[in-house]
Image 1 (spheres, rainbow, N blue to C red):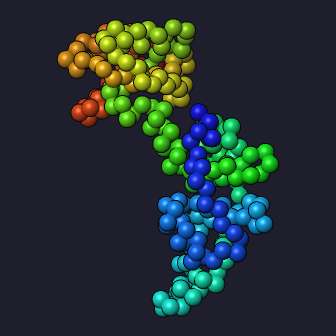
Image 2: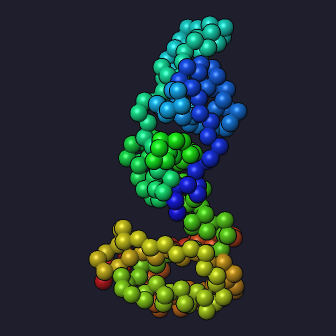
Image 3: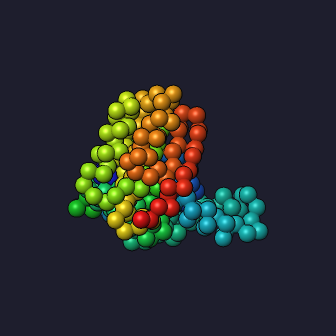
Length: 232
């Protein structure tokens, strides 16, 4: 999943000489938390809602409303922006982008092409939307987590059983994190299952791989199982 398909393309750039008051207004009207800052058409920084709040708080001590409004109209974005902003290219994957944001402890980044032109903005909120889409949560259904053997065919053995019970697979995710050597964790979300046969399905699944947990997003049922401790 590439950034260019999930970024916000409605970019609201502002000039480096824009007043802080104008920036606050633009951010509220556009309902964004990050604005790219340009100087003669070139990206030179970004300003976030956190930057604006921090600058307002630090300069507002002992000021009345009129003095504060005057102050905000005098401060320029260029004085409070983050210079040399972190950017990502449009062909970055969401995982790469999440790693960049996490490593640099930032909430978002401009997406720029090879010429430095701004194509959009990618934020944590966009990554959350992608995660929900990737996991198939909006389909509700049932999610199963397993500890499967790290070998060819182990995933198919599990999904074949779910399909046999009429389940339509929405997402299949795997990870070796927090798994003993020779195993991996498998997360399968499916919908279309007959809840009356859910216990029977789980019994058949247990014969194939240990179940870590089951969450039924239709009624909120959640169960964790002791099989998660299996290490042999």
